[in-house]
Image (cartoon, rainbow, N blue to C red):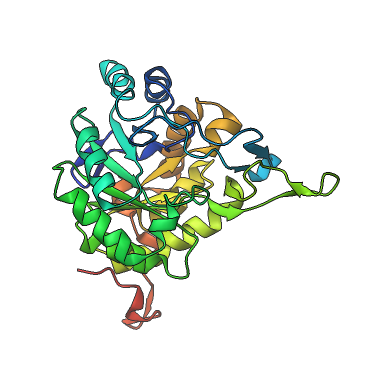
Length: 321
């Protein structure tokens, strides 16, 4: 049988399918449920210094098979309350990654330190939420901020640090490289795309906040492109995020350069059993394609064929040493 195990910057995962932050991680029960449904690891909601209610309704609009538009406003119970949910998930065997957000480097570092104290396997820095003023991508669009925040966190924690970057930028590679310079253990790309919908009868945005984030199958080509661009330009692992719903989607991200992937909107569209289905379908697809280990095809799409020993592609896509 094909092998789905991967090593993500020292964090050993039973398969490359991670529960994305924000979609199912409200409680220890839901995190454990995703783990027991077959996820290789689960990422918590993004947690801040104190409780945050988020935006008033409406906060989500369904776009059918394309996905969702949402502006939740990073609701969470705060770092004082949330550790008990992590403990509940860990008690049921889950590999947990803690997600945090803050307003500056010091706040990120303090939150990461406290999150690491819960025993999570890694920390993910949310530097990419597109609709929370002064947070997320407001900081994460600036490579200097990304580097400074990552460096501050790296100085306080010993667990792997994953930096989740925004697609709402002209140069995702620059953000990934800034995170690497700051000491990141891995990059996750991408978060939602900044987007809006307008109700023509009410003459106002459909979401209370106005601007929101687009997620789901509609953004897969964007996420895939970001992973494709980033992979050869950094020496740390990449986690692919955006529109993953099928085994072929997973394999596309892996061949573009992702060592693992995050599954979010598909949980809402298809239910939490999407993890077991993806695992089974991925094993079947790998068997069909003669792939023994998922780790063996990371970045495989960057390997160009040659004619008479001469590569058909330029060296710009070679993996950085």
